[in-house]
Amino acid sequence: MEDNIQKTGPPVEEDKHIIHSLGLQDIKGKPGFCLGDILVYHSSVDVSDVEIILPAELPLYRMVIDEELSEEDAITGIQNLIRLAPNASCIILAHTISAITRQMFIKIGITPQTTPQVIGDSSIFKSSYVSFLSTIYNRDRPIKPIIRLSATPASIELMLNQSVDMVVCADDLHPSEHEYGKKSKEKLESIIRSVGDSTGKTIIKNGEPVELSPNCNTITTGETPYYGSKSTGYRTLIINFIEPINQTVFSELQKTPLTVSTFYYNFISYWIENYDKIFSIIQKRFDEFNKSSLVGITVPRLQRLYFNLECSFFLFLTYLYDIGYDSKENLTYHHGQMQKLLIRTIKEHLDCINKREAENPNNANYLEIINDLINNGAFSFTKDKEEAKNMSYDGIITGKHILIRGERLVKVIKELVPNATLQMITKNLISKGAIDKGKDKTSKPFNGARFIFIKRSKLR
Image 1 (cartoon, rainbow, N blue to C red):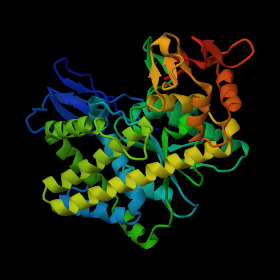
Image 2 (image 1 turned 135 degrees about the vertical axis):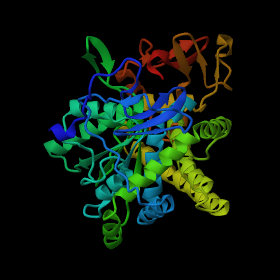
Image 3 (image 1 turned 180 degrees about the horizontal axis):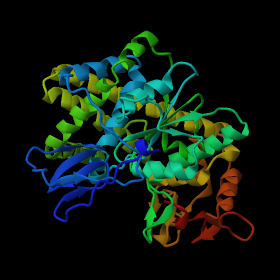
């Protein structure tokens, strides 16, 4: 047990700058990054009075690198690893870089909130591959998923909270319907929702309430995808691990595990030294992104996911260019390929969610569907009550309700759930306490016309 716990260290002098957590730090006004027992800091900062003292209950995270490996060879090693599974690997790499640079994205206005699921048959080494590519710490030890879904919910929440600015990989999603499989799916649902909403349970620590919200990115592996409700589906991304990787090549790469940690260490060093420049570049890209639209990806949450992963991969390519590893032409090509891959993967994921809703119209979460449609501008509204009879408007916005014409509501929803009926929709809304009904109908009259009265308090 002692080997797995960070040492608290000796008493600290009051004038020392103490670092208490992993990940991005503010060190005397400049960025730094705590990698467990190693501190990456800006060249302009004097760190002689800086000390790392991590919580005693935090699992031991050590950044072990190959100091003899050149920066170029570390990159070559990563590229060899990527080539084994080019589609899945690029997204996994981007997700890992997103985790490392997580605090920068949050500051810009994008909080990483998606839990990708890498799905494939058994015995194709997907779990080993995902862990090998995304694990930063302790690479001189056997590399495996950090969380098993057999772990207790409390231990999972604590791990997600303490594992700052890194990827936490969860394995062991069972496709079966026996009791263990059901419990695993419940835990996976909890992880996806917790990360997707940036929330966690509140505990009392030193007499004060502390929320155990996630501070990391998460990724899971399994044999079958888990979608849950439509809103849960929007908080995950299915990545299909279609073919077995070349085990001979993978085995050779596994013999030099420090190549990967050395690459991440070099990337973090580059990012910290050039933080202000990179922040400005990403902020500008985000401003431009907010003025544009993605064809075929209409869900805001999935649009933000695209931006986060696309920009994270862009940072990887920018790093390669800035150190002179590759030409601008080659990197521009790879960037374009990544953009196409992300759009295709997210659209396929969205199509699967919509197909599931269409095949099971009675089970569709119509409140979530309506919420997303409203946020995406699918309905035209007026706030002028005198316009109630004006059929050019789909509805009216009042203080406590959003009023939508029943026939228009069904028509728009049928584009996503073709077999949906007004009865199915209103039954779902009534079960969630989301509408105010009339005396004998689900609609109510308003200024000479009838509307479905949806409570604004039930919408996001």
